[in-house]
Image 1: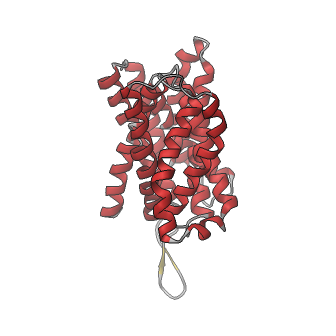
Image 2: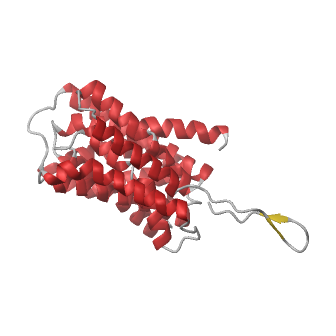
Image 3: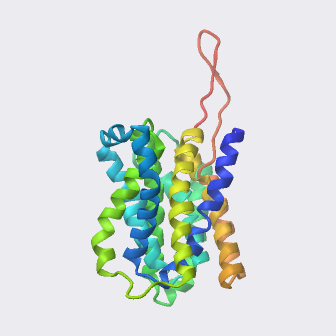
Length: 301
């Protein structure tokens, strides 16, 4: 990976590791639709002037169909589901379940006709990663609290599909105007529900700061970095930062909110991490040679 790729990777690991903490703080003071509306409206309003100044809005709108699908998979559905789940789940647990994105992504790539072979190493990774999820959620499911877990897993599914859509259909679309249009679209979709659930009183200062952080840092800035990372390293490796941001989510939840950290959580995270690394590993065969004598790499990314 290039130096620029590593820098983007580190930034993404942090800015998408802290949203779970901020969502947990904010959702205690406002409704789920209002929070999704607020974070996307803040991000959209921040980026739209720059998008119009760049004159690329028309280019973005020419790709409105795949952009709409991307927006639904990345924001409209996942952000409602994740926010709703965190009304009951600890932020650290939500962050750990999101670590399944690379595992789910490997399955989605295979099911959608991707060229990657499902080697024995990747098969083992899928099994180990899913075993980690089972260890992590089994006590919750046994207690009858299944739906929040399902919501976060559906969020992971959306997060796994969206980069593939972006890479296959939107790779030539400028990132800033695409982000601005996507965020504004989500804000418009959630406007009626946000109005219906508008807070009766001004939220506490910590809730307002959490919403501002979600909109400015974890949404507007994060997506610009995310699109740059996809273009730098490709869609499969672009989600590898999900190996790290769960650790950021756990650390933030434990240090700021006093959430529990026990052996079960650590062992489950280890299984998910190992599974994700194996499921997205690169299988390289010995170089073959054309008749002209030029070596050809036959490894699978």
